[in-house]
Amino acid sequence: MKTAELQAIYVMWIRQMKKFVRSKSRIVVTIVQPLFFLFILGAGFSSISMPGLGENVEFIHFFAPGIVAMSILFSSMFAGISVLWDKQFGFLQEVLVAPVSRISIIIGRTLGGATTALIQGFIILFIAIGIGTPISGVTGFILTIIFMILISFSAVGFGLILASKMQDFQSFPIIMNLIIMPLLFLSSAFFPVSENETLLTIAYFNPLFYMVDGLRGSMLGIDNSVIQNPLLSLGIVSTICIVMLLIGSYLFSKSEA
Amino acid sequence: MKLKKPLLYYNKHIDRFINKIRITKNKYSGEKNLDIIKITNLTKKFDKITAVEKVSFVVKKGEVFGFLGPNGAGKTTTIKMLTTLLNPTEGTATIAGYDIIKQRNQVRKNIGIVFQEPAIDTDLTGEENLEYHARMYGMNKDERKKRIEEILDLVDLQEKRKVLVKNYSGGMKRRLEIARGLMHYPTVLFLDEPTLGLDAQTRRAIWEYIKKMNKEGQTTIFLTTHYMDEADYLCDRVGIIDHGKILILDDISNLKNSVGRDVITLACDDLNKLRNKLEEKNWISKIKQHETTLTLGVEKGDEKIPIIIEIAQKINVKIKSISVRKPTLDDVFLSYTGRTIRDDEQKNNLGNSMPPRSRGGHH
Ligand SMILES: Nc1ncnc2c1ncn2[C@@H]1O[C@H](COP(=O)(O)OP(=O)(O)OP(=O)(O)O)[C@@H](O)[C@H]1O
Ligand SMILES: [Mg+2]
Image (cartoon, rainbow over all chains, first blue to last red; front, top):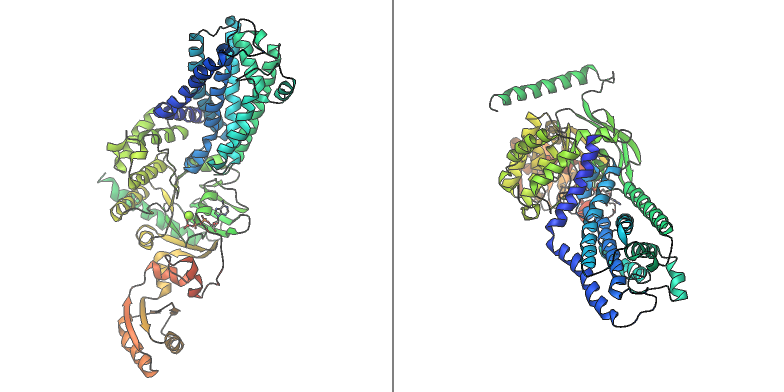
């Protein structure tokens, strides 16, 4: 690859890192919100007995992978959608008129978005481990990281798709409330779906379910996931990730400034 | 610096001289190396309107070319096609010999652009904006460092280099954008209304930068503007576009002469009557009726004033005011588009040289 292309990837990446580090409020919100969920809801629900939890698993531990997935999903998606900011503030034109391929721009943006999201995801993960969430060995930990990365890239891809289709941020709350939140609730992030036939059937059509379930299986051990084959989960989530990234990049590369 | 200037100045004149020779000598030989921008039949259609219609012209190397036209004329759309941001519906263009459709990357390497709308990342510092730009244009570390110093000096932003752009004033942002457009030594620099909304002092300063880079850097400049004084001061040649079509394209001096050596503006109580009478006179090269005035293009304007007053008296028309002046680009613009550049779109039909036409709103 030519140096200009590598430089473009680096520029798109470092730019997001700088902006991330500088926006203190964004860091606080994106880290505090999941922790708030984890502790308040985790503590609240732990007193009621919840069907579908494995033996010796406390609710807050069941809950932890869901919160990690949620925080990565939200910040990655936001990173993808932030292309829309660049469009509105004109900066996208500056990028598109540079003598570099759109692919490099997309790669840089995706890496940048994923990096910031994963930093947040890891902070939550380590806090969860700190409060006693068990990790099922080295393989489990490696798988956990792989799932986190896949979740992040899928969500950046989805964000890019939204950014290419949306003209402004007006439809953003609608998409969040009518699509993302329901999918998240039905993904087993917050409560088990395995005990309810209907919920489980719905879950199988929900891409987020495979991500959350796979992440949980990797972190807590395979007994805790619905799909008992980690390779199957991994395959499905990888496929989702590739499809999202391909569609996202395609739409982005077609967009005119 | 002091020594360099006259030499480059001289070079530019040689360049122009060569251009002139080329035009007279090679008119039909098809030699193109000095046509840095060559536009052929460039057309852009949006859903309902044709924003740019079969535009063809050339810009020569080292020239400052002005692209003038009222709001919505198609200036920005043309620039976006030339800078590979929009695909033409028809036609094409070459920049530095590279095709804007087939050789985008080569074109992109050769151009710099300052967009009409701001296009800087305001969450980064001025220096970071320049640095990232330079990286994307493949400049190495030493080149980047040297060039950033140079360019920050040029636009007088050394003190603000470490400040986030969101804390810049409007003029500083504009200067930074111009600096960024120049970072990578473009062959052609596109400036879409570079001084829009700036105060007189900043505009002056920016004009000086533009002149400087054109002279010292041999950069060809393609600029659009709504300010006739700006075009007059900066440009060698201008093209006037309206409703997506080029109306006229020539040297500024030729354009002014085409309006008449002098322009007489008068107001009276019966414009139509006086106009009809004056139209019989062959010493008036051009006559235009506006809302409350008539403008006449004449030779030796001073001597014509008494004659006109006499004519008016004979047909019982009372002249309220009359003045004579040298033609400006405003007159040229008025004469070709039927309205001054600042006239509202609603007033289109008053100029009566253009049929009234409704168009999609802009911005
Ligand atoms: N993306 C678009 N979709 C539809 N119509 C467009 C689009 N961009 C521009 N137009 C239309 O094309 C015409 C030319 O617009 P353009 O921006 O080129 O004008 P302009 O000469 O730059 O005007 P101004 O002096 O106001 O900047 C206008 O009628 C505008 O509404
Ligand atoms: Mg414009």
